[in-house]
Amino acid sequence: MADRNAPSFGLISRNSKFCLFSITSFLFILSWLFVLRSTGGPHFIDHSLLTNSKLFSVIDNGSYELQNQNFILHSSPNQSVLVNDEEEAPREKDLAKCNLNKIMLKVFMYDLPPEFHFKLLDWKPEGDSVWPNLQTKIPDYPGGLNLQHSIEYWLTLDLLASTFHDPTGAHSAIRVYNSSEADVIFVPFFSSLSYNRYSKVVSPQKKNRNMLLQEKLVRFLTTQEEWKRSKGRDHIIMAHHPNSLLDARMKLWPAIFILADFGRYPLNIANVEKDVIAPYKHVIKNFINDSSNFDARTTLLYFQGAIYRKDGGFIRQELFYLLKEEKDVHFTFGSVHGDGIKQASKGMHSSKFCLNIAGDTPSSNRLFDAIASHCVPVIISDEIELPYEDVLDYSEFCIFVRTSDALKDKFLIRLIRSIGKEEWTRMWERLKEIEHFFEFQYPSQEDDAVQMIWQAVAHKVSSVKMKLHKSRRFSRSEVGGERGSILIPWSKFSGEK
Image (cartoon, one colour):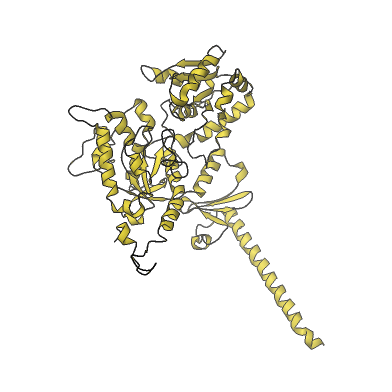
């Protein structure tokens, strides 16, 4: 009987030893981590081990984060620091969130002739050069309202500069020269500038320069192997001004458009699933070192701009009549001419709330002027789409009002007056934390508007690839006879070699 039971006792003993060994190993590893922390840590952590662990997430510059419920171990070639993530500053939390989700986008950019991009800025190429030498001189972009839709300029500069050495590692996109290695194909046509500057017919021409460029662009793209390979689905085309690319958009619609809104697009041509909404570049000056507060901002509600608009913009004139007699409300006509921008900067910087009302299209630059001014935006635009709303919760720093409610007598003014000092201050603080997401600059910086747009594009890549792969399911097709009797390679249809 004893002999019969001996193996089971041996099994229990072996299991106990295994459990003891596992617990001891775990405690040893844990103590090793705390030794690293207390000594400043030897800087020879085996990254090959860390990258295979689900406890660690890779972030920029070879750094790693050990994530637990309350603590993050920041490890880099120079330091290891254990911090309580609840004590991190809000901006650091935002950056950590963005870094963990950051994707380095590989972008192939067509070497389009200068007439499509920098020559529109009166830049003159030297010899056969297509691009300006950014290390010598950066071509200037025209000011005024042109700046609102200048994303084409900033994104192109960023791609050109991505080949330079960058010790900060801030880039979200890098230019590659083999299109088969790219995630997306970038079309460097300054379509908004083309519309703003060259949409008038100059005699003896029968077509304006903007239209001619669009025709040339369509002919060029539709003959490229890259376009044929994907039917344009992986191409990035910028059309930020609502009237830009007006003639070509119906022929280039499979591409990913970067737009201000969908106000002048049919749903089958542009939509939130396929395309990217990008911010305007604000024209109001940033409120540097903003030490204002609820009481210091003496104007309750501010609007200055075009009042009489067409389409959805009718609400502006309706609100004008409802609000013009209200105390502490500034609602007047204004433009960028003269010292209009200076006046608007001063007005927004001294106002608690700034109206962002639908105009000819759902969006306007006024929202981004308000963000730069730390003036809490009041958005009255039912059809508006907002930049990177998958990352930002706009309700934390904006007030949204339905058009039907805003047009009710006294509804809007009562709503605004009901927002007290504490709630307003919370939104004002949040505006200062997130304003960097809307800044266009060269060179681009971590999580600025340029980087955020690239990240928004990167989020579209998996969907595009899935659609492309599904479209190739039946790339081999029958030609005569029974179904499936003759198979033809996809390359015969797509032009691939």
